[in-house]
Length: 380
Image (cartoon, rainbow, N blue to C red; front, top):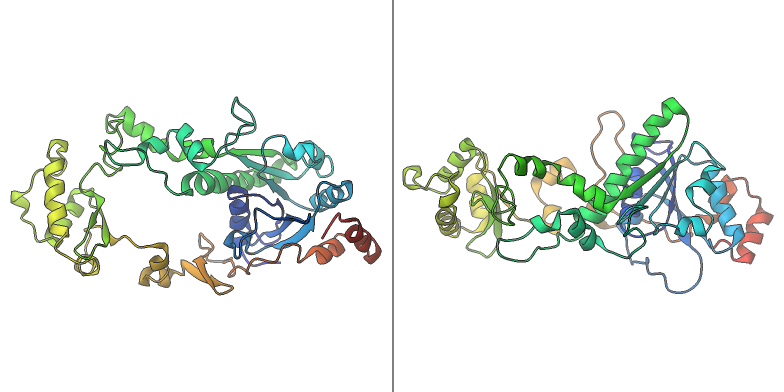
């Protein structure tokens, strides 16, 4: 059994893109035994990457789900599993014989987790889309960007990973908790639109209380406030400033060698353009690391804007073990942290189909049956 709070949990992952693999990475990182069902059919694999951290910490079995024998292999896996996760378009899993009713007929206790962009129903359910489209429909994308400029996609963090993969993992764990009392499995329908919208919950309170203008880039937390923004330093690098509260603002003023008596009232929105110019000029006198060093030990809320690769080397992240080496590749560590059941460092991604024979043997398939499945092209 793997180390971690989910040690002993058995998860079947039907290989897919971004949100479903990320959900399985989270579960695997925390100790779940995840078996990834990869495609065994020959030809170009659009999922293949030279090194993919979203494949870490699990075994791989190659299966051709276009064959009846291949589908039967997945059903046999599901019979002994706690969770099955897929990220296909609505109807695809059912069409190949691995939909919720088909799988749970073999294992009523199974939690069937599925994630899509739009959800399993609704007018857009069967249409194509990507992270940027789901954020647009959720209302989240409209809030990201500068005043008077177009919205900016935040990579694919909020849809694929936050609103998709983490949303699904939370749903799966919730269903597992419910199963402890009911003894029954259920379907978890996670949508990136739903998840991204949920991430914006606080915004609706700000809007209702009059603390959000509704215009992008004019508000307290979207870069509109000069004391909650990023600034360029003398060396062309950037710092992030988050001096919202009065005591933090006072600390920032001191770090920047400004005279508080000569500054505009920082919470007066009419003064924000003037105040932004003052802060930009003051911050621009310093190199990034020099200014960060001045702010160290204070509550000025000034931090360097680091690239992901710089972040992996920062002393705070090093002390926390926020990043780890997996197979010689630096990457984010499992999280959160647990005092009694800490997870182990993940194992590197396995070659697709590397564990086919071992997994089938664990299921009780004898050598002759495994050989027959290989010869028929049902597994590989």
